[in-house]
Amino acid sequence: MTTPLSGRDLLALSDLTPHEVALVLDAALEQKAAWAAGDHSAPLSGRAAALIFQKPSMRTRVSFEVGCARLGVTPVVLVGEGSAFSRGETVADSTSVLERYVDAIVIRTFDQSFVEEIARVASVPVVNALTDDYHPCQGLADLLTIREHKGKLSGLRFAYVGDGNNMAHTYLLAGALTGMDVAIATPAGFEPASHVIAKARKIAAGTGASIEIGVDPNAAVDGADVVATDTWASMGQEDEHAARVAVFDDFAVNPALMARAANDAVFMHCLPAHRGEEVLDTVIDAPSSIVYDEAENRLHAQKALLSLIMG
Ligand code: CP
Ligand code: NVA
Image (cartoon, rainbow, N blue to C red; front, side):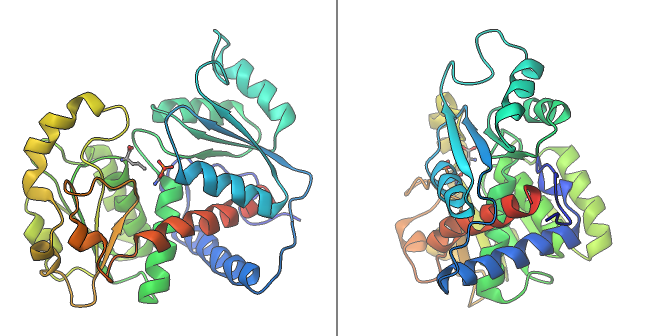
């Protein structure tokens, strides 16, 4: 059975239209409820997916492996040096071989251009499981989580405080696609990439979303319905950790910052969190923190995505 997203790649959230994002979220809600109600049918039985990790992972790996298992898809995990795209083999050769075995390629790597190159060659769907630029699967899970907690997306005020990294980029696109007002505050020099801001603003023009980029965490969080942050030093930036902690000190999400948000604001973090750095225990352990729901929804959002693109 084909679906409206059969065969499609997800390299960044901007690969989806606002309607297609809603389609994935609807499917995720439906499949999550069906699974909880005891419907354990495996609609993609007999298929296989390669899950390639060139950076560390816990949540993404486990949620994709379990999601595949629930769909009837055999997950083939390729981790570490020498497992895939190595030994001098060209990207085209590796991809052309992989797609003879598997029905989807999920990859976590460094350069966005690398997943784009794989997607150009592959005739099977390619899913970005995090690059230096984007984390679209996390974006879908986070949208699902916000929708569950707030009952809507359009019109919400979403604040992100911290590094202008792959998560900031993902939230810019996620907010733009769903009609949220996104306010981002980063230290000067750590803003999101200008091409991503431009892309988000272009999408926002069609959805009623707004995009604000600044350097004042208080201004970003004032009245926000959702407050999110992420690590100050992403994977691959470990050597910069100490220097970044010094620069980002004023961007920690603490109770005083959360108090500026709406009374019923929720706190989000894709995890892993660095407690005492970008977020304090008193925020991430508060009842308003929905970080574990967010982590759980990785499973439901990705399972829905795979069922649509592999269907
Ligand atoms: N949030 C997330 O992607 O976690 P992992 O790095 O553990 O996969
Ligand atoms: N920005 C973080 C996200 C981890 C899930 C990183 O890239 O390391």
